[in-house]
Image (cartoon, rainbow, N blue to C red; front, side):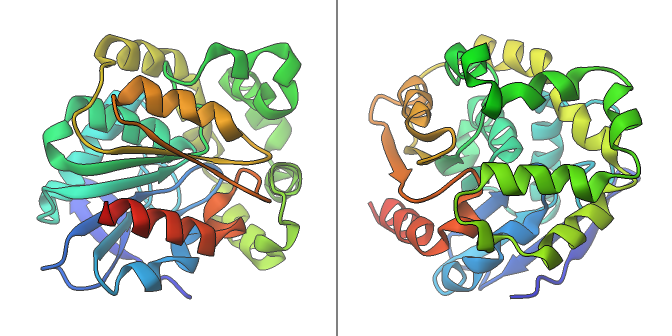
Amino acid sequence: MNIKMKYLELEGKRFAYYSAGQKHNPAIVLLHGWPETSKIWGKIISALEVNYYVLAIDLPGLGESDGLDNYDTDTVASWIRKTLTSLDISHFNLVSHDIGSWVASTYALKYPEDLISLVLIDAGIPGILPDSFFSFDNYKKSWHFYFHAVPDLPEFLIQGHVKEYITWFFNNKSYVKAAITEDDITYYAQLYQDRISEGLGYYRSYTESVKTNKSLLRKLSLPVLAIGGEFAVGDKMKDVAVALSDSPRFENVKDCGHFVPEEQPEALLNILLSFFRD
């Protein structure tokens, strides 16, 4: 489906979002990851909007949303909350992928009263995912966390080659290779080519986000579901669910890489709808 974005002006900044469904229904807020936008949810939104009000937000500095001075998850989560308040959304299911899950975990720890449930999909979540994920033995999956955190050098090397650079991630971190098309990659590259530093800002604030989550970390009373892609973060996401809940739920999506919403949308949809009904 084609997602037509809407825009919200807030404290001198513009934030992009997509909404679908009837506003009187229970709400689902969707947060995407890097190097993507709210477009990642296009394969499941039409099914979700039947019984839910769905709101997908482009994260600050990514997609079509304006940037911030700092991209630590505390700062970003507070802006997401301001955005939702302005859109009159105060109680919702929060579903997130990749960097979106970094923000969502901090949001849940800071503002649990806002949430009906929390879903975290295949992400190296600061201060919560086990440190073993970032070991040298796992360099194929985690090398970019370090590279992106280096000042200036990534921009120097990536500038002018944004499409080629992000294509590497889609080719190497997916299992279902046809799930993300050449047109999809072109779309993402066009949005990211002048915003490299904004996307890298999340990684450069990673240590600060670790400190935030570790200082807030506790068991949440709301339902928590962690989802891994079999050939990506995978079953390490179970540790995330256990860290955040006394009654954790975990699903490992088979035949799937990192880009779960695009690679296995039907499986993800079935998991989400079952979880929301429980």
